[in-house]
Length: 205
Image (cartoon, rainbow, N blue to C red; front, side, top):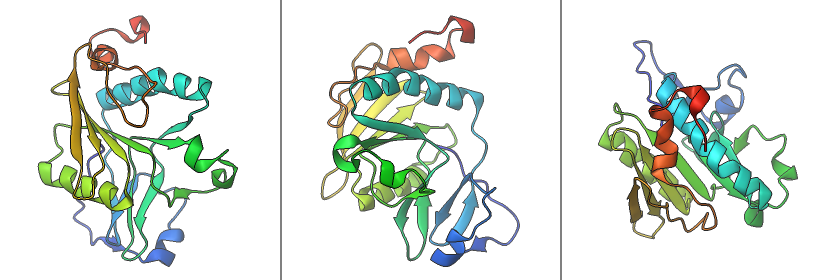
């Protein structure tokens, strides 16, 4: 989960029409109730973890024709009024719900809930910022959210409920992550976090 840069300049506030007309070169941002909030550049460690999850999960998703696993920057619209968008580190779209994806090929944003959101947490993330992000995913009715904690080397799986997300499990070490969405995909935290210990040219999935 990328952190937000707090600028000393007056915030840029947009409505839906203003959002649609934002400069195309502006890609790394979230909009919170109309306010455009640039996102800080993620750390190298953060990007290694995101890449490792992609390397482990994406080939299985593709080979089994389950759908598509995509990465930021790509806007997921929470609501149009006031404008609210998020950019998950990774999100999964199932072929069962989205079909063959032809209708999304030219879309610069997603206005449907992903089946799964994966966020890599940073030490600077506060409880309130994470809770606010979860509220947005809950409003969208995202069925499942993974919180990948680099400091604790834990992957928490949260599943949707009417009153909020409930913990399906907190996984560490060689435990296989349980998922209601990607039940056939095998992944353990030790596989994911191994990239933090080994030189890049020795890493394997």
